[in-house]
Length: 377
Image (cartoon, rainbow, N blue to C red; front, side, top):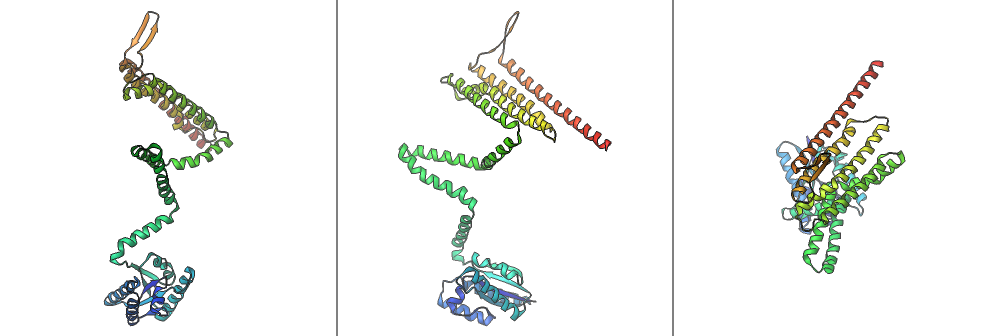
């Protein structure tokens, strides 16, 4: 078996520095070349590449392989010309030595780009990359940075926010005259950006205009109910804020409980409106209604009842809301916080069970219709 151990120099430094005409092959020729190249430029990394080719050749010969060391160099002023020069030199080596396979030795990532050219002419058994030990960390960092800067998505995700931070930080520092405020504002913005990217909100926002346009053009009811849901959600937020503002100096926990208690009905109505619109779209579509869409409105109402029950318990215990009084002909009955909580939780569970029952019944009817259609066929 004959193996061509070829040292690749895409930049053409070997031919220009040593003043030789590539390709160069043979152990004696490469030993003479490495001496001339080392004397001319001791700092050239190609010296190590050629020495590695000689070492691999000796190692393969010890294993009984008829190895031939060689050097190809891209002597040209352009990248395309250099690649074509290397291709022509490889054709010469293949014609002269008739190798069965090749081992490619490179010393830079730029040289490694020529591996496909070698593979188009010979079977490449291995690629040996030589990095000078003293420069290994520097060179690895350089190529990592080069690959990073070549990736447009990474540049937009990292460099742009970093540049905005560096621009905004001195402005905030000048306006607020407080290092703590400026650092806190920048940290909050970076945290919001990381959450924004981590949850994939950017992808959903990018798809939102196309989805809204498609919904408008297709006449979907859900686009209207989504707007209604957004309005109800704003009403809920406003109602919760009004309730909190009336509490004065209450603790944060009590304020949160009061906010959720007063906003939950509106938020539940908003979710119910959105779910109902989606359900109507499913009803008028040709594919029919899937059971999850039937169960969703019931689930929304059930969750709203349970959340309102727990927040009502905490808020009433803290005297943030009045107790529940039910008028009867015989008199008014005051319901305890525990009784209100139990009643709302039980109502939520019952609504959820009704939803499961309705969805299951609908799914069973669909299965029966499908089987009837199959028997008819």
